[in-house]
Image 1 (tube, rainbow, N blue to C red):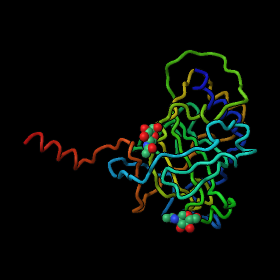
Image 2: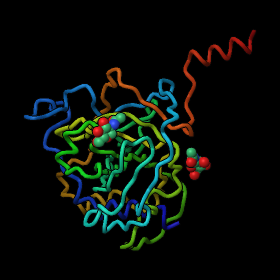
Image 3: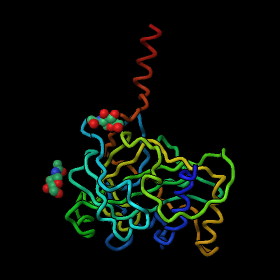
Length: 268
Ligand SMILES: *[C@@H]1O[C@H](CO)[C@@H](O)[C@H](O)[C@H]1NC(C)=O
Ligand SMILES: *[C@@H]1O[C@H](CO)[C@@H](O)[C@H](O)[C@H]1NC(C)=O
């Protein structure tokens, strides 16, 4: 049960990592050296009826990844690697961060699915092996981000949660089926919005129980009251003719055309 609350503990521990954005997203395109106004921007709304299954999106292989303790993620992240999952090459763990909305009036995930926005989103950022971060940001697939939606469940009982120092990536991800994911080529979601990111957005959310951790107190402890916590996520961007594909295991909603064809066959 404790496992369910670890991400929030982690969130509390890692809040210092999240950068405060100085400008509102609508003006990011005006910043010098910014790609924020370009055509391969993230996040996006994933419209499942327009997503095609891609048989090349095979299972990911995670090396030293799940056992990674959160404390070592930032210090010693380069020992954990991923490949497979349709990625061209091996990517090394760099860091992770969270996006969320208002602490009381959720939601705040960056990506959305069929217009649905989850309460939070976790990004595990990895960099193509052999590239520095600067080189990676200048390459069209230099960075691979694993995006996880975080859902907050209402039921459950309150308990005291001790801060655990050995939270692993496996603790974070829990039971999420890693064979079900969406893929598209996009950008970072903060300036300079470099168009260097191979996005993987997992279909299943990480589930967290709201009752056990007081989000608000967590935020209040870590931010001055004047800090605006609302909308620490970028609005979804236009897909601009780019495509989103899905791994074979991902269930896709039928398009309206397919549905109506099905109905006409049944009715006929
Ligand atoms: C991918 O992983 C799933 C679940 O672990 C497994 O059932 C499936 O056979 C794997 N597919 C391939 C191609 O290895
Ligand atoms: C795969 O990555 C290598 C090295 O970064 C690059 O030279 C090659 O063009 C990439 N292949 C594809 C299909 O993107």
